[in-house]
Length: 403
Length: 139
Image 1 (tube, each protein chain N blue to C red):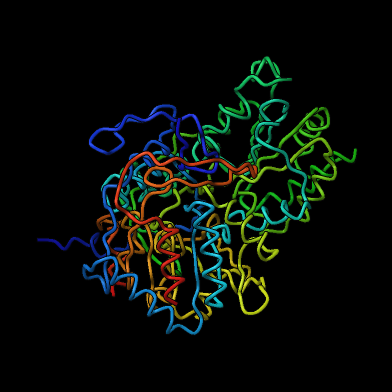
Image 2 (cartoon, rainbow over the protein chains, first blue to last red; image 1 turned 45 degrees about the horizontal axis):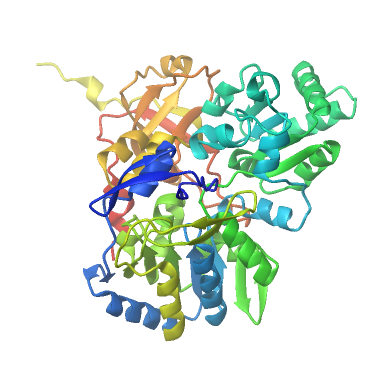
């Protein structure tokens, strides 16, 4: 059995059929996981200034660019093993660099609240065994973490939930769109207007307090009644909710205080984003957006978005991420104007504008290690295919020796 | 021979609010080949309720230009198969939707990926190619 790196569920029950040293077929994966494990069509090749180079020259050039930088940044590492992440944090510290990852515009600050124990949480195994009321809020797990409902939340039998979804569990979706997850939550889909989450939470708090809510009174009282009766509840917080409340988790804390039998679970996309957050938190006390210079300091200005907008960085190492694809295009010109070092198994939009490209092994397929599931459980990754690629951990180690 | 006045008339523009979402088929295509036709086909799409499309005199398969102060893309419009009340359009998260996103974040570092105000109009241009998102930045 192998572990899938398609998302932060890190499904550990994967079987593969290998032919000609490539994964030909996978079993038990979702559509995303199968595609991830089979690998991309366009492997990255080492290059300098978009011209083919050997890997040693690429690493030397990358180190030279980093030595010459006054304000370097390390970005990414969410698709890397915990071992590579630890090395990446060491590299950032050695360079007095800014370090950030995609959690900066995803679930990082929510995970930091959980690591600070400001929000009650539990494991996915607790949910499978005990949960009776499940709230998918701004989260379409069916498309983003496709085996969430079948492995952990709605469909499985659990220790105290032997009758599964037919009798023992109730799933609720709160969303701006009738997502595939919302379709499963038949009769319990609450559609809200864009940015309507805050108003919805406030009304729900009123309803839970026994006051008539100002907003959608009948539905809100019905929802409050279901939540109050829950024996063990979970709120799966998707980025729909996170973006809508703009990381103001006080309001979520206020709701959680009204629901003492509920736990908060961040719905994480990249397979080891939580691992990055936990490793940086352990090292610095912060989950992301950190500048090393003597003491580690966290500030919004050290987020990838603000660092690029304010043109405060003059070189960047990007590991396992594709910001040219995933960031607003209005921010890309500054990224394109500084030296970019791209470490990735595959060609990406970012690799096409990078100064130096360094290919690495695909973790969980071509290299082993460990990763942290969305609920904080550490899961092992095995190597499936023999190959000659360096791991991203080794590449970071080499950069560290050379800067 | 008369002059075809129609070709000089600008197609009517409508204000729309767009939110983004994830689609597993598009993510699968991304993993396989982010430069490929399948990823483009599943990404360069905007979907709307039947009523909204009727109001804007658009039909599924039309090309539309979606623009705002931050960018402009040509994508295919499709009628949503879901029960949508209208007033909100949907794009899967991709470089095509990211082209329309403001860099204003109030200093918080989180762009409005799920709240995009834009204008939409019928277009006879080709779907914005993937190279447009990279070409300008080649080193």
